Length: 111
Image (cartoon, rainbow, N blue to C red; front, side, top):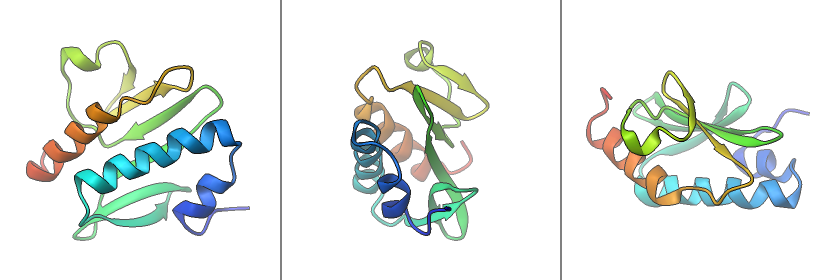
């Protein structure tokens, strides 16, 4: 069954995955409270002025964070693709890093 909102998306996972999903959501909301929440492409999405800014999604061994759009040496030890970072579930979520990415992208939306 497809999630209708972020709460139901998170509730569809085991507790050990729900906790990091909740942490990421809270970090994004704290860094950019003006972002609207939605489900797009079957994953939690944060929107500003009609533009999808960030998505995140849980997988078996990691959580993907879409919309990063920046590259630096701090990100080098995470698996990444074009604007996507993978955070292993076996490690604490890098909430400070997520907060900095969200803040940077909100302040410079062309990143």
